[in-house]
Length: 194
Image 1: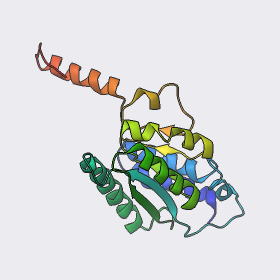
Image 2: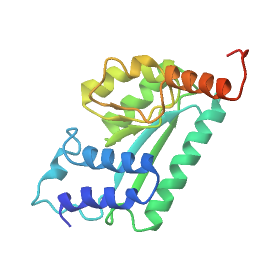
Image 3: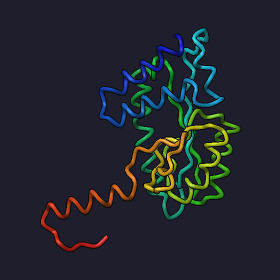
Image 4: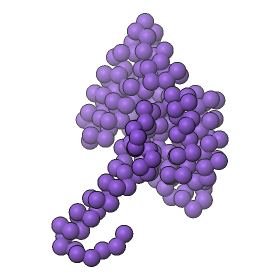
């Protein structure tokens, strides 16, 4: 199977889900075909890549005070990836996820992300958890031209100025707060605290 058909298939597989999965599929196509040095070769029309795994990597707190967040993110991602793989993958390409524990510790996050990029050669980083941890590796995403997909943080620093390799799915804290205030006002609440 040629690489160009896989991109179309990713989008087709994901469009029957809610918008976020379409967004995910579109980004996955971008990642596979030219967004970084590990995957740029896949865009070559003459290269047959049937069966090659799509490898994502993440570093999340699986131990420590924020471990509940890491376990929830991993459960969500793996359940969707299992679903896609059970449907035959993305045109025969299974999705693999490499997970490391950072205990919500920026130095561990840095070490894990370096390992994911340099040793594991992931196509993209996905679902990193936390503002201080994620901000500690943005420079590596830039340096290695590795997409950082859907970090679990609403930090403005990951949104402004726009970053070429950062793709947010979660709204920023400002947007979340505005929606919360609107909700309570519409419910007739005049006093509330955040």
